[in-house]
Each structure stands twice: as structure tokens, then as C-alpha cells.
Image (cartoon, rainbow over the protein chains, first blue to last red):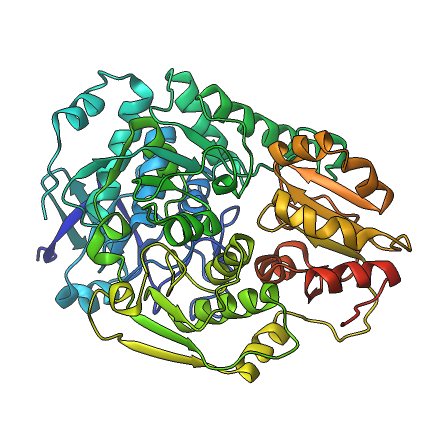
Length: 143
Length: 413
């Protein structure tokens, strides 16, 4: 049986797959993510202590200081960033961080805008595959 | 919404103005899509907050721009760096951090940015004019430019402030547009502590509106008309630290608020906040983490960078007994030059003042480890120093800071 595929909007292009890490609240990368390890260090965050490295990071929205862009780019440079980021709201800080890593290091961390109606189904998957191209993105559950 | 690119935007993207500008424009297009801007506008200037070294990615970004032969297309000032290039011996961090910090500052100079290295570019020859479209980084500078001058910028940051400078373009959204600049929160100062000076009032009001107004532009009513430009600078810096305030109006004082009706664009405010003397006292108290009388390690002044007018207030306070605690004063190198011309540098040093240029005590390794409690007259420094430096802080007026330095413990006047 083929896994269902969900449409999404490409914010930053690329292809990635990995295990799902769903955040229950927006995360400020600045002050909230340790770029050297990928660990969530914001002690007030519900997923504090979780590691984003290699994960398909589902965060509904962004939050916090614009310094978060450099934190994300630095985490990606060090190999401790997420494999892809799935969002429900557009977020400039996240997009810029992922774009800079793509331009400077050729490290694709696709960022896509998913549909709210699909969010629960996506979060329930053990792993996801994202393909984000210039004309749109698709998300499917991995094996 | 689809993004409408002008002929210039397309040239920039195509590389007709060089690889650096093309790289910057690619980033700006993604950014504009993410904030749903329909097009770009021309800007007159930029202030780039990219010189503080946090990690390799920021340095790689600036150096890539240099390698691509990039140059800024509009007059561009620089925010503080990690190292005081005038007094490099004051840096106490690792050699590697210092080297990378200096490289980052130099890379920005190679791109054609002016060596201002100040968080108060609005008190320099680069002060923008009323109504100017600009792309600024650094939260206090953004608040001042929008509010006190009436120039127009969003809260730009990492990579994007420099990208705007490299292209001379900014996305047409947010505070660039007249309709988003009207006040949506009304802050009424109902009573003021009798014993307070305006400096302390400004910080307490700023700290409170940052916490209580969320993303709404506030209009403040009831601030005495004698408040100085430096008081408004302190207000904005405090508000942009405890909250995300990028624009505030002071009715009867700031340029887009001749009266309440105009400040609010004729609409009723969505939020009303009334501040009493007791609220303001509580706000000021909340900025100190130690009790009065606590032993003091050092005083830090000039967050944002001390102006010449602020030095003129400080000078007469320094006569008499030499302080037992160090007083650090952060200022721009341009202000430092002015101090020297006036012969003020020597009397300051004699009164145990260490002048810091190009950087700021609360973001860099300048004080001895284990310094203890720091006292400051800045709401911004009081807000950030505990997290950044791992110190205790006491907030007080300028006169209280000097009196406390003199005896080495927190004194209230």
C-alpha cells in the first residue's frame, strides 16, 4: 500500500527524511537551541532536553529574537540542525537561517508550510519524507 | 500573495550588480515571501547588527559577501562588535574569540560599512531624517529611529539587515507602511513617584510597556514634556528589551503623535494600560536582583552608548571622593573623540572611569571574572546582564550609580 502524500508550500527548497520531532509550542532558536549539540535548552519549553539533530522538526510557528537565524545556520553547519522544518505559519527567522546554511554550506534543510488539517496525521508518523521544489512540496510518511 | 519584482530587483537577482548583491537579493526574496510582502522599496540607509561574534556561520556569511566582491549600496552604519578596537587590551575572552570578533568587524568594513560600531547611530552624523525608509538592526536603535525620529524600519536582524544594505532594498511590509504605524495600545501615566527624576521614569515606563503591550504599538500619555532625547532613548531601549517594541508614540512629544487622535489614526485603542506611581516603583524594583546596601563590583553606564549630553551630566557628579568600584562607560568612538577634544578623558580616568568604545560591557568579556554585582542606570543592561554575564544587577539613577561606586555598595538617594 502506498503511503498517503500531503501537499505543502515550499519556503526553502530541498529534500530530506528522518524521524519526527513535534514541538508543542513555538521555539526561539536564540537562547532556546544549543547549536553545538542540537539540544533544546529553553527550560520552559515542553520539549526541553529533546534533540533536533536530523529530525523532521514540526514546529507550528517561530518565536523570539532574529538572532535565531544565525543559531539555526550554525547548528546546521555543525551537523546538529534538523533535517527539515515543517510549519503551520510562515516564519522569516527560520527561513533565513535555513537559506543561509544552504547558500554557504550547500546543506539543504527544506522548510515547508503544511496544512493544519494534516498536522495530527503527520505528527503521528514515525518518520517523514519531504520533497520541496520550486513549484510546491510534498510530505509523505516514511517506512 | 505573489511578490512583484521591479526591473532593479531582477537585475540584482541576475547578478548585474555583482555576486554579493545577488546572494543578498536571493535571501531577501525568501524573506519577503515569508513575511508576505508584495514588493520591495528603496531604502536610504541601513544599520547592521552583524559584528558581534556568536559563531562561525555569521563570519562565513560576511566573508562570503567579501569574496563575492560585495559592497553596500546605501550608507550603512555598524552596531557594536565583540572587541574594542581602540582599546583591544581590555578584552578578557579567549584569543580565538577575539580574533574571530576582529575578523567579523573588518569584513564588514571591507563591504563599505562605516566604522561606527555603536548601538546609538541615531546620535551620530548618520542620524536619519523624518520619514526616511531605512533597514535597521539592533532593537534600541530601531525603537529610537521609528519613535523619536519618525524614520521607518522593521525589526531587521541576522543576515537581513546586511542584505538590505547590499541591495538598497527592503520588503514593503510592517512599519514601512503608514497604516501599521498608528498606536493600538493606550498607556496612561496616572501618577508618578514624587521623588523620581525623569531618567528613572523613562526606564520604568519603557520596561512596563515592553511587558504589557505585546506586539501593539503604544501611545503614551502623561509623560512630562521636559523628558530629554536621552530619556526617550532609555525608554525605547528598556521597552525593546522586556518586549518586542519597535515603535512607540509619546503624545505631544514624538513626531507622529501631535495629539492622541493622530497617534491612534482615529481609531479606538485595543488595549488600555494605566500606570500608577506604585506600578512604576514596582517596575523599577523588578530590575534589581540584589537588596539595597549589597556590595558592588562595578558600575556600567552607556547601554545604549552614552551620548555627549550624558557625559555632560556625569562630569559634575565625579568630583570629590574617588570611587572604590570601577565605573565602565560604553560610548561610540566618535563620542570618545569629542571627549578628548574637550579634555574630559583625563578627569574621567582620574575618577576611576574606564571608557569602552566599539562594544559594550553587557555583550562582551570586559569585566574581571567574579566581579560580583553590577549597578547600571540602563533598563536594557539590567534586563540582559544577569543572563549574558551571570552577574547580579542593581538598577538605579545615574546619581545613585555614582554614589554607589564611591562607597562600593548599592546606595539609594
